[in-house]
Length: 196
Image (cartoon, rainbow, N blue to C red; front, side, top):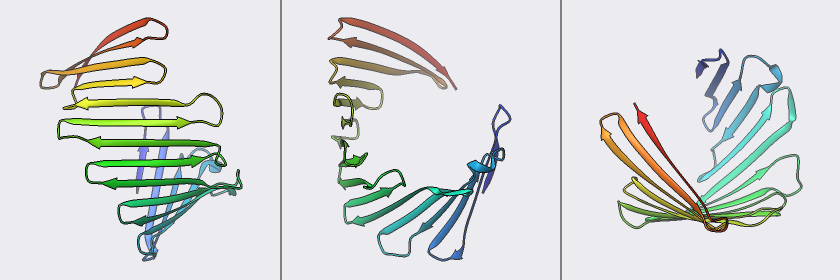
């Protein structure tokens, strides 16, 4: 349970209980300003390797989402239902050793997405994402990071982004980056100093 107030004076309340039943968790979220924004959540975990969740507006239960996930070894499959569509969103996640991938079908099977990640070593990691929206052009991006300090990202729009992070002293970090858009012949760069 928590009650927060941000610097603008806006409140956020979250309360939960697992006392109703050993396999059920009840949650409530509110901004303490608008009763129509109160959200109620019920999560059931009583089936082995499964999780079922129902979330709705407390004053309008027809505005809901329901999710179900099931783990099968290294894979997790899931569905998400909303009142807006006849077909649910589908998702599949697979993790094995240093790699994982995910597939997603949403918007009535009109949009698809896929991601992949591979940890080559403790220092080198590679990731990719592909998005096939229901409207517009497909998007793809491939990126890699070395020691979390050097990053390169290449996108299907023929842009290349690079960044370098350097720790100057304890609490002082310098981040430099550049972007080249081959299709436009445009080049941009920047630098940022972070003080903690």
